[in-house]
Image 1 (cartoon, rainbow, N blue to C red):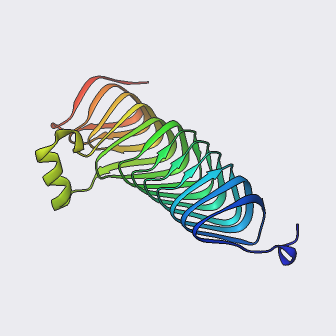
Image 2 (image 1 turned 30 degrees about the vertical axis):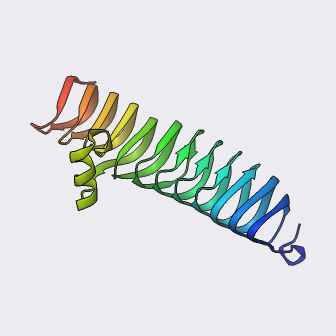
Length: 226
């Protein structure tokens, strides 16, 4: 459908709507959408249940406690807060912050993560930048450039001191890339051309082609050049 013929969808407060094809979609408050949404731009604030997938030509932004039963597909995807996506995330750029939970895969060109995230599927991106605030779990990561660093502030240090499970760390089954730098990461296998293992890591196996560096504050059971 041509953009000129599309209508906007606005839900404010407590309301519900059916899926469909729209121009701009904005959802504020406690809302429910039954069906797939196709639009130019999608913005969701508050607590919303989307019983379907969301496809946008330009951008998707989800803030708060939204739950999406399907996938998200857009050029630019942003999730802030404690949103849940039960399908895949597909696009050019994705920014995930807070404590989002992704059941499917994440396939983008550039991925930025800030917070404590859970991704049950595969992350595949050219550039992956992870800033840890709390515990994160990503089953598998693959990319060209991968960086995982711990961000520290007064709140994160306080929570980690009182409750060790809140300590900022990443757990993964496997991590593969060209250039890899990891901090406070627990992983089964890390494979790359140039691999740097920073402080706080616990890695079972590292396989590298060109360069390998390891912090004295890291534990690596076995590393080998292949």
